[in-house]
Length: 146
Image (tube, rainbow, N blue to C red; front, side):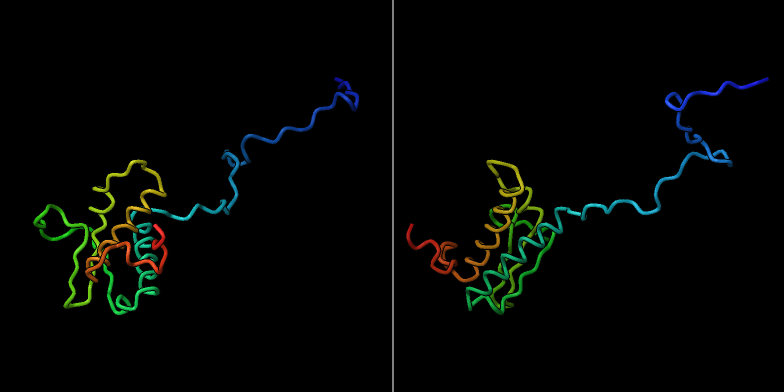
């Protein structure tokens, strides 16, 4: 039996086989595209609180020897409810409690920027309590016109 030849314009490109010779489907590439960096609440809190503490140490000489520590929850309940931080002046320590700061902050807008503000505010207030001053007095002349 004779085959009919198709003209060049009507010729179809050969389709790739759906399975290879072992009956398996085609494989994907060995290397995948890079995954986005892992970002979670704990790492974000540590980064924000740590950078705020470093800023305060750089502009306030009294805080240079203070050790900032981060913990998940306080061990005991404070007089006014759940503590968000604990100031221990005799040991030159400020302990910030991540979960109360993140969960008990009443944000008027729940986005990344306002969550960052809440963490920075807690670090500023704890540092001001350690020094016995107002949080507005910690900035290097930033708020003196207001």
